[in-house]
Image (cartoon, rainbow, N blue to C red; front, top):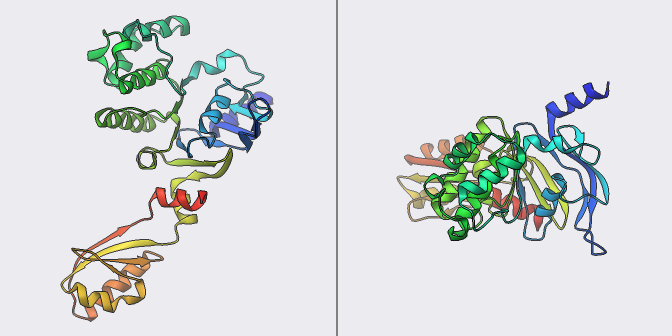
Length: 308
């Protein structure tokens, strides 16, 4: 009966924490009553300012730290009572990647394959995935910060994990590296891998994640889908319109608090249904509509609403 219950739970939630609390020694509480839920196949972005508790949360999820109170479950199993076999399906990169600077990139991956009993053929695959094949024979001590970060992601990918946990994965990367990792995460998400990444770079999270958790001072202020976040907290959206007579449209649509732009005007609306009414008003006034572009409230604005 217990096995059946565990199986059903793991089918629904890959990560589940219950009222987790943690503090370093006798300092103030770093994590306070954290109840986190990450569905199977989700791409989950953990957002928060520096010091919000993101890295500590990821360490608690991976057994690098143990909670003072509460429970951490992975794949339906409590990590406090489950053996090392639980981590065979998990890839982790938290803070600085654990690299040997005097070894090549290839040999760093080889060391991990040896102690995790992973087939060596996987090395070539992950080097391609993070675009490091050309630098694989170079010593890691000569790598840039971004290259070391990409190699750290490759280390996490070696076991072909079902759960991938990454702490600020694009730290120090150049634009080319950022795009490569972004495309990789999108591809893994399409393969139904469960991805949890922490970041304070909201635009990147918006591009790669369909679920978010927003942390502030060790507490979880929101968790759920990005779509639900927008439904719950987006108070309005802006619409850009360009017409044959923008000056006249500006006066006609005064109730939408318009502001003028070089090539058109911006209006504030509460719902999409108002767009049709705006177009009707303009047509009745013999004003031709050349462009209508809705702009939903950004993830950045929603984040600021929750944390301020």
